[in-house]
Length: 128
Image (cartoon, rainbow, N blue to C red; front, side):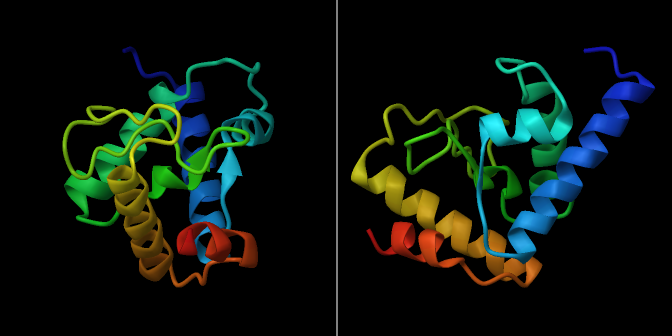
């Protein structure tokens, strides 16, 4: 994937939004991120999220901040790679109970890492 200055700017903007959400204990839908980044709905976010994942998880050893994103009406995001190659473990239809529990633990770790406390709606999700 060729990286140009626009891609770098979008990655930075995306990462900053994810950090803001983590610090405030919130989550965001993929659609919300498309709007925030001013991208067309349906644009593949992997070109922006994969470098963030690689940097945070593999370089800095922090939890996967990209788990903050999720689909409308779903508890989980699309992936939970847990230190493996980005997007290596997919979650379909909110996954199995075991995947949801792992997703919740990762989300808690993200908030703890960035000093956030889960917002009330996220806290409800984490208890389920």
